[in-house]
Length: 263
Image 1 (spheres, rainbow, N blue to C red):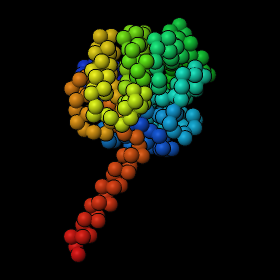
Image 2 (image 1 turned 120 degrees about the vertical axis):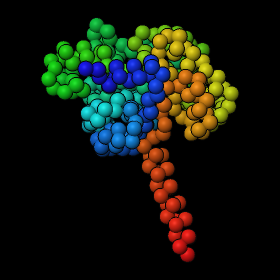
Image 3 (image 1 turned 30 degrees about the vertical axis):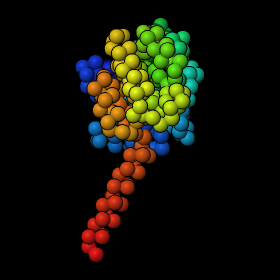
Image 4 (image 1 turned 60 degrees about the horizontal axis):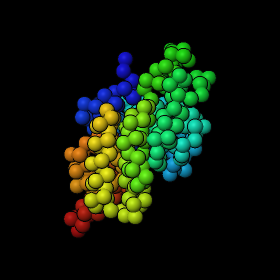
């Protein structure tokens, strides 16, 4: 039976899109099933910009797997210890921030897999696939299912793009548009030619190496349309708070207008 990681990669290889949500503020294991009901296929447990504590990866990640949503974690950095704690406690992959060099890409790819394919320390148990497998079987399956995505967030990363894309064990390239634009001295210019060029280059590098391309950050629908046309397939829409606020504002606006119409 194919797992979520395999299905995710195959879906993108076929040209499909995978819609994800940045989980920054949710503290309940219900967020995975909620996102599944809304049509999301992956989530990013954000430990770089979130006040969440690592133990939440266990409850939220495992509930997401059971609901059919791929739980990826964004660690705060490249620490093998942090990566191990997230991956052996519920996450089934990584969206690794600030991967600027092929050396960094190789290190995080190795940190995300058990020997002989990597250096991830073997835990006492691995709950991602239920409890019917031996530890050896579960670790072998994990190595097949784990998804490792390198975030391209700087001019240095763009300069090393081809080498990062060619790194074994890196499954996809993901533009962190906000950090990239700030690094280029163009804060907030999501509709500018610089991001458009970065999208083109990242999509081309991903295709050339049999990998997928993704992005998060923009809100403008025109930017997303152009990016999808260029080959972006792993889409980080918004975070859970902004989605909640969008829906809340919509409801307030509706009832305010309805009340005015009654007057």
